[in-house]
Length: 402
Image (tube, rainbow, N blue to C red):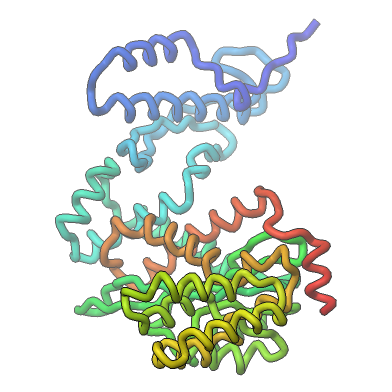
C-alpha cells in the first residue's frame, strides 16, 4: 500500500540536521543568533515548498515527481533581524519562486524601501543610519530597490483607485502632516485620508492622497475621486471644522449631513475658558453631549447659556456658533452615537501611522511617504475585514433608508 505523503508546507518538519543546528544556536549568546535561526527557518520552509514543487524529496522515488533538482542560487532577504543569505533551489525544467519570501510583511518592505531610497538619494543622516543598522539591512542595491518600489507602487495605486462597490453610510475625513524632501528643501505635506463604514458594517480606508496643504481644492479633489470610484449612500460626514474641508464637503457631498467632531469642538470652546473654570465648563459641555435627543440636548444648552453667557463671552460665542453642527449625530441611531460624534476612530488610525513613520523623520520624497502610508492602510483595511463588524448591518440599513 502506497504511503500517503504529508504536505511539508503545512507541517514544516525540520530535519535532524536542522534540529541539531537549532539546538546549537539556542545555546549561543551571540547577537546574530536570531538572524541565524530565522535563516534556518526560511531555508526549511523554502526546501519544503520546493519538495512540493518537484513532487518528491531529495533522492526519493515517487510517481508524483514532476521535475528534477538542478543546483541552487543565493538570494538575499532584508529583515529586521538582519540581512539573510538564503539558498533558493533550482528546478531543471520549470521556474520555482518561493512564496514564503513574498509573504514578508508589505509595510516592512515599504519601510525598508524608504530608508534605502534615502541613502541612494544622497540624503542619509545619522538617524537613518541608526534605523538601518537596527533593522540589520546591509546591502543597498539600486536594482533591488527600484524593483521593490515599482511593485509596492503598483499595489498602492491599485488600492487607492479600486472601485467602491458598497454603500458607505458614514464617512470620516482627516489629515496628518509628514515632512518630505522636495528638490533641495524640506516641506510639510498633508496626507488626507477618507475612512468609512460599509453597509455591511465593516470599517474601510477608501481614500488617501498627499498634497501640499489642506485646502478646499485638495479636499474637493479627494472627494470627487471617491465619487468617481462609486462612493454613494453617505448620510453623514464627520470631520473637524477646517474651512477648506467644510467647503469641499458642501460642494461634493450634497445630501449628506455634517458632524463637527465633538472632541475638536470641546477644545475650541475650552481654549477661551480660564483655567480656574475649565472643569466647571467641561462638565456642562459633557451634560449637553450625553443627551440622546435634540429635545433634551436643547434643554441642556439653555442651562449652559444661562450659566455662562455673561461671564464667558468669547467661549460662548464659539459654543453658539458650532453647537448645532456638533450635535448632528443625534439624528442617527443611538447605538452609533459614540462612534460617529467625533473623529476618534480615524485619530486612532493616524496615531498608528505616526508610530510607524516616526523612525523615518524626513521622507526622501512625497511619493515615498505616500507609498509607506498607503501600505500601512492596506494592512489595516485587510485586518478590519477579518474582525467583527464595527456596526450591525440592520442598524445601517435604517440609516440608509432615512
